[in-house]
Length: 99
Image (cartoon, rainbow, N blue to C red):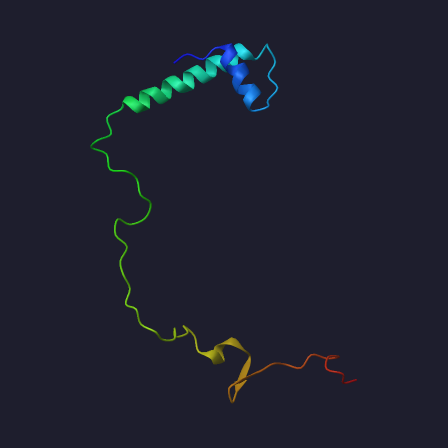
């Protein structure tokens, strides 16, 4: 398939693009080469090729169990001090209304 300057002008008008007359031959040449390459791809035999699908062919199922996820670390490990189920944090001077 060959694309001429008149085709480029029509495409530019449809896309509301401004193309100078000086650029028309180069664009026509480039678009013709692109279309020729696509026609080569269409002629390629791809019957033995499996289509690409991202991910595994068959996703494994997980057991559908409801429950909590155990922590990797104990809760006590997340603070400097932990007593009776509470995090004990150091007092910050000047906070809490005390002077």
